[in-house]
Image (cartoon, rainbow, N blue to C red; front, side):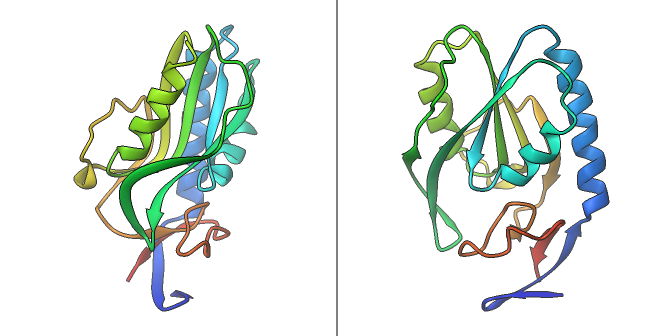
Length: 175
């Protein structure tokens, strides 16, 4: 059991399972994007741990950049997305791999995909560590999914509760 502020969490997905799945995803990316020089676009703050572990195993030529957006207030998605830090790389005619920590309602991903498409990439792929299928309001094609999870509140491995708990090496579920 882990206590973060007023909530209690317990291990939901172990560090070992996360690392094993991340390794599988990296191998697939290395094959799928061989010779294509993709740009990994990490969505901050949540994706930083996942993207870091993934990137350590990427062997193809590639670049990384970040976009910071927010649609959450007090652990609930507001459905209104606002950009906080913009794209700082040219993606014109380049493949982009959007890397998310979690896809739930789909509002944030819709905003990101719309923004990215306006820069004329050759292809946009989506990778997420976690997908809450039951929470989906705007469906998206997800090219690479680490784990499908129940519609529960999770923290750890980059995900937070009021900006706390990101540093846990596993995914914790609210108990």
